[in-house]
Image: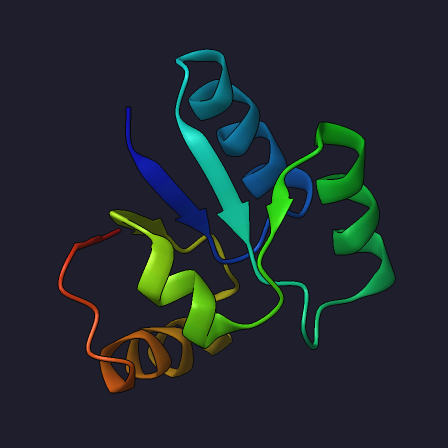
Length: 89
């Protein structure tokens, strides 16, 4: 069992999270700065909210980023700045 951080559990990310949870993985996310719509998707699936990206990075074995093309580099840079040592997808 792994702890998997989902950067954006919106309409697509929540489906990925659901699939991962069905395989007995712990799935977490960081709600800080996220939209109400994203919070709603995560809440419906009861994805564990760790609050902020720093905590998400510290607690995750794997981080999956499902985000818009415009924010790909920003998300990757943020994760790298927290010195993530796991697998980043």
